[in-house]
Image (cartoon, rainbow, N blue to C red; front, side):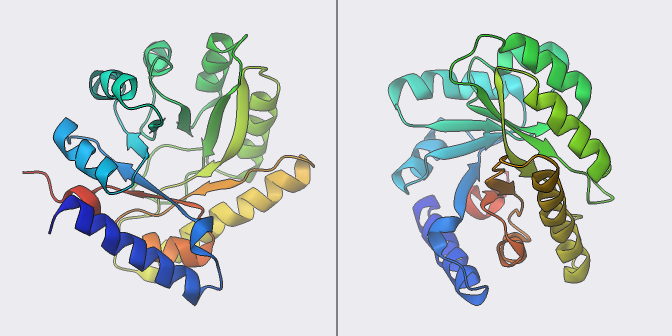
Length: 230
């Protein structure tokens, strides 16, 4: 199956998951996670209608996407992996959003680097909901404090939350993880009236249909689009 065919299959699965949960397919954005995959495969994904990509590593993102974005306007790139503070400046040269803001120190660094940025840099706060994932804020209180910190930084715009569910065949455990993020989003909105938090980034190749059923607005798909790494 080609990458374009895989994308079509995933879109069909997204639509069915939306129908099951009483949602509209246009409420869910499909991101192609292109880590470890090169330009030819990314161009195939573009041919399949993908314009949003996710990368885990800053150096890889810069190498692959700086020239690609110059040649193909309209491509959007989000950093979804852990970001070291000493690589934040480099990340901002190519990334349109940071989904993995997982600690206050990083928020402060990003705030200082984007002090006069227009428009502000979209960021998502990462909540730790799965035992296998070590990154992310540990609970709703720390998440709310982080939201207050981000809102105090003029060059940052808090647009949503992100999580990684545990990698398990236990669907109930995965569902609980996603429900934690949804509840956290509700809590933060109540504490900061007027904050939209329109993006709930949750769900990957092995669990994106459950994520959609639980309210995801952005699914991050790598293997199901590009196949296993050779």
